[in-house]
Image 1 (cartoon, rainbow, N blue to C red):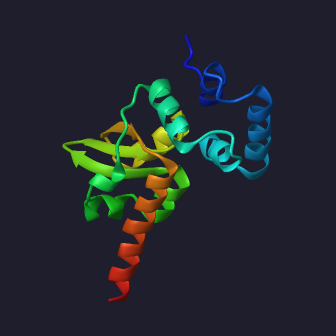
Image 2: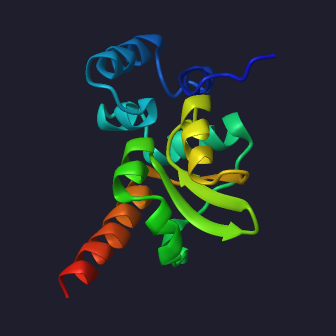
Length: 150
């Protein structure tokens, strides 16, 4: 059985209407981007509702990014462009397993792009909110920019 998509899960729980999903999909088709982010930006659902349903959808746990200090070595592999473009943030590496945090559905193409960065490695996925992911991007990548100028 195929896993339900985030929009279907939100509709099933009465948090989103078919019309709202269609509108969000139209925006996604025109502008690109992650559906969860679009649904939040349109005011249809909250970040927490998206995160809860992503956890349900993929069987992943929630990870509060504010509690972690990310190793600089990971950020040398996962550059800002990669992280922002794929919507992932590496959090930890133990052996050949990289832990990443995402705030939207991680499709097969994204998973393959991440795996290319860690040949022979595995990926463990955790869910976070859009705000936490954005704050972590700003924290770690602004920190790298500041280190370059000092």
